[in-house]
Image 1 (cartoon, one colour):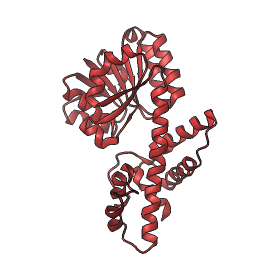
Image 2 (image 1 turned 180 degrees about the horizontal axis):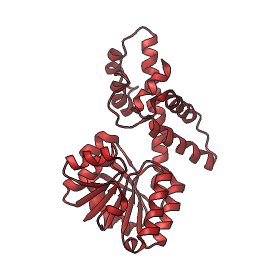
Image 3 (image 1 turned 90 degrees about the horizontal axis):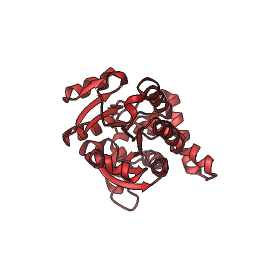
Image 4 (image 1 turned 90 degrees about the vertical axis):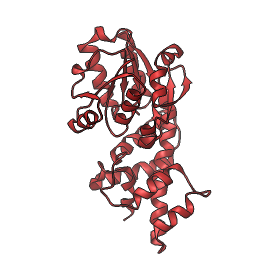
Length: 285
């Protein structure tokens, strides 16, 4: 298939490369020149403007925020409406149920077919094609793009309505948000108790207290501020905020999430927004 991937960030680029390696023709777009250069260095065509992308059967969207998704859809609907007829859009960004429903309906009204398919697994699993994909929407639309989805990971059909996948991702991000902050607090506690966190981490991560986030983020928490960024603090400011919004919308109580969200905001306010999300640990220092 001919696939355009919009958003070549830390997770979007490895996803695009997995699609390419599966034999599809892939072009990418990102407003950041550095992201395009990384894509080009790995043999993939990348441009800075949507209008410069070639015609494609499928569009994979990995932008960062609901606002970016809205701008992208507006541009597509207003500048190239003819190209949307019959085109498949796979919205894989974490943008929340309301956003994907609103923008999905705009695309459908213009003739596009839309799949709501957020992912979990982070950069590590994006690089190996082992993401878990929460795919929602019309079953026929999901089947039409299954070869593209399966290049990136395991597909789980989570519902017939746009937004069902995003709703599951909201639950997923609730846990991720809380688990990262809990790991940071625990390692900070170890230090306050006079222990070496680097010795404590391997002792606890394989036991009942272990979590995927503890094992993945824990080692980076023990490094310095400039550790490689695989997911930025600002992403979790956004994601935990989406969870809080969704919870308020349905009347759910999420006190632990509220605490975690406050920590990410505190880290961002301290100038760490563009740093790896593991640096939330610095709010305890």
